[in-house]
Every structure is written in structure tokens, then in C-alpha cells.
Image 1 (tube, helix red, strand yellow):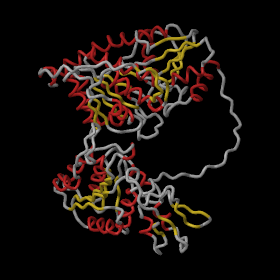
Image 2 (tube, rainbow, N blue to C red; image 1 turned 90 degrees about the vertical axis):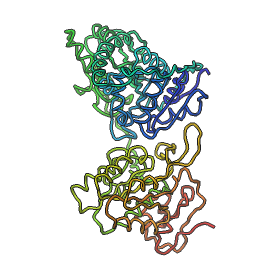
Image 3 (cartoon, rainbow, N blue to C red; image 1 turned 180 degrees about the horizontal axis):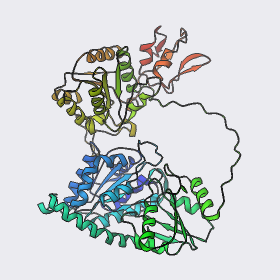
Image 4 (spheres, rainbow, N blue to C red; image 1 turned 30 degrees about the vertical axis):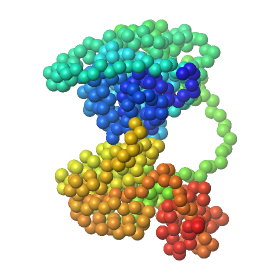
Length: 594
């Protein structure tokens, strides 16, 4: 044990292990992915860990272990929490037995998400206590405190790290693991079965309990007041470090750090408000603290100026930076507008189009569908993951995207309005098992007419090739046969199902053409391993007979193919040997090294 340089995700994992966690579940998603992977690398035989099929399954497996007396943790990003929200809201009423921590990593920016959700607002909706760490070392400490609060009050507790906390590094003192022995499940229908009458009673209990937790939170070190003076700054999360940096050497500003935003530490907040005349609130995403302080001023008749997102003093969206924070403090505290610096003219950077990896089988799958459907009227529903990059030029094959597995259900809705349009729904293999399966059931039951294309690359590739039910691998080390996607589709009664290797381009195009002419719900499983998993066994080059028609560049957009001195070349350091370019070359000038 001792001091280690850890990312926030590493620190959360070690914090859970130190606290004696027994069961850890999750679904991969940036910025939370490495939490489970760190647990898997450092666990002992007393810890069970799994990549669940989706966020809802992860939450429910952990909840089951918790009501059997285990300490459990769920690791998700904010969209994974959406997936699990139905069960989270019910669990808040029902309660738990062993400590349960739900990690919901918010992606401020966003960097790898479709939304900028603030889990602090979800905590208020669900009435669940939440911790908001400002650094990896604080995340490590908060995990142990969250388990203590969870067991003390019989409630799940949320930990909300943001992207910079998850991925940033600092020195963390890691202590020895304190084992936790599960006590087992005890039958009690009044406790574990949420009848409507029980929900009413539990709601009252929660509303009475949370002010007690708020008072307890007011005494925690994570909610602190430092400095002096009549000007205040209230801050939370990663911005705490930015504020300390901006106010280094300044002694006449009072800082209120909020580490547990719900239930809000009202006593500590009132102590802060009564000591200052005006407050600047610095928090990423929702104005949670700003609204709480404004409410307290009205409730207690305090005439204070509260500034932040709501009055335009701070940006309403996006993640903050040290410069954003220092400029805001300069204006609010010192009345100084930031100088408009004359920057040196920088060279214009080339436009970098989002693209699939060299050798990615999804490129071949999308291209095959595009070639097969030439001349037809069609709309393509997309999916969260690597295949979404197929929306960019030159493929331009994804027309819609909503959430994991939603391409198939969006396509059903479009079909009802435009029955003369061929609807094609793309989804990844991980998405199929996570949420896509139910969409296919809905389509077959309601007699939709659409073509489902499942891009099976044997992993949750975008987040780091994590296993899923189709790959057979588990986080506990089992390696067995994965669930056969084609067999599952056939059991659902689809009118046409075919598995094809998209790298066999002509066969793939023929399969799509055949499927397009079938009515009802039909599917093609494009099966070929992720280029990051399958090591290349071939390399290709452009021979001297190339006429520079550039069809390979115009139609594929592979990053390994480039123009040098107006001649097409293949970068052998990038080429993964898929051979797709050789198959579309009309004069067969692209050759395999032998």
C-alpha cells in the first residue's frame, strides 16, 4: 500500500477495494470505464466483478447483492445512469442493506457523450445522497465515506466524478483493504417488495431522513469554509483546484467548498452566507449550488448577491478551465476585465474528418450497404459507438442517432410515416445485447418492415474492447462460447437472417441486395473482428500502374490511404491489411505484399 500516482478512476477502484467492496458491476462508457478494469486487475477472491449487458442490469445485480448484505458498487457514465434510472428511483424508496455506491461519471464538455447531464440534479430527483469529488485523492476518501453513509441510512449513495477528476492524476495514499462479510438475504416482503402503500410510507421516511443527512453533511470536511473577507466564492468539483490557483496569495476572499451537494449542507451554507455580502458560484453544468444558496437567502431573509450561471457571470454549459475561472474571479472580486491579448497568428490546421480506424470492418459493412442500395430510397438509423463515425464523409451512411440501440426503434417510427422508404437500422454487437434486442422484439411483434444490420466486431470496441455476452469472455476470467446473435434472431422469427464477413465485399453486397427485397424484419450480421483486436497478417501497397483515379480515397476514407505528390500511397505503418481497397480498385493496382 502507501502512496501511488493514480487517476481518479484508479482511485475510486482502490477506494472501493479498501472499503471491502464485494460486488462491482458496470457498463463501459467514457469517462468511467477504467474503474471496473482497475478492480479486475487488483481484486482478490472475495470480490466479484462483471461487465453487465447494460446499465440497468448492472444496477440490479449490485442491488440484489446489496440486499443480501454485500457492499456493492456500480460504475456508469451519466447515460448509463439513465438506462438504470427506473430501478434507481425505486431502490431509493426500497432501500438497501449492505452499502451500495453508484458511480455516475459526468462528461462535462462533452468529450464522449451526447448530453451534458448533471447527476447532482438526478440525486435531488431520486432523493439519494451524493458526493462530488474535486480530485482523485478526494474521490478515494469519499468512497469509504459513501459506504458508511449508505449503511447508516439504508440508502444507495451516488458518487459523481466529472471527466477531469476521472482522468486526471495525483498522489493518493492507499490503505489496506478492510474485509466486509455479507450477512445474507433475510425475507421481509414489507421491506423488499415495493407495494404502493410501502412506497408512500417510505417517501415520508426519506423526506424526514434527508434533513438529518444534510446536518451530518454540514459537519464533514468535504464541506468547508476557508479564507476571510466579505466576498465569497462557492465552488464544487474539479473547479476547486482552479479557484485555489486563481486565489493563491489572496486572503480577503472566503471560499465555500461543497463536496456533498444533496442533501444540501444547509447549516454550513448559512454560516458562509452570513459572513459575506456577495457570492460567485463556480460549478460545472447545472446551477445546483447557486439555486440552493438563492433559496436559503429567501428562506432566511438574507440580502446577498448570488452570481453564477443564472445571471451570466459564469458559462451556462461546457466544462470550465483555469482561465474561465480566473477571468470570472478577476471580474467579480477585483473588477478587472481580462486583457485581450494579441496572439501570434498560428498556422491553419488541416481539417480532420472523424473516421473509422484503418482496417475497421464497419467501413466494409457500411460501404457494402451503400453499394447494394444504390438507386433506392432509404434512411439509415445509427447507433452509439464506432459505427456512428459512418455518418462522416465519404461514407455518409448514418442519418439518425439517439441512444444505445435506438436506431432500430427510430427506424420503426420513420417506417410508419414513410412506408415507401427502406429503413435500415445499424447497431453494434454490444448494443444488440444491451438494448437492441428489445427493439427487434418490438419490430417483429408490431410487423414492421426494416432491415437490421448488426455490426459484430466481437467487443465493445469504442470504449476499449471490453467483452460482452456475444464474446464469451467475462471479467472473472471465464472464456466460453458467446451467445450466437444469428441464432437469437432466428428464434425471434425474422423473415431473413444471414451472417456474412464484410471483408468479402462482393458477397456482402449480394447479401444486402437479397435482404432489401424481403419484406418484414430481416437482418444481416456483419461479423469480423475489431482491427484493434485482430493483428494484421497482410499488408497492401499501390503498384506503379496506379492512374490516380482516387476512387479508394473518395469512397472509403481509410486513414492509411493518402496522396503524396499526386500519387496514391498506402501507409504501411497504419495499414491493417483488410484488403477492402484492393477489392474496389478498378484496375487492380493495389497489391498484397508477398
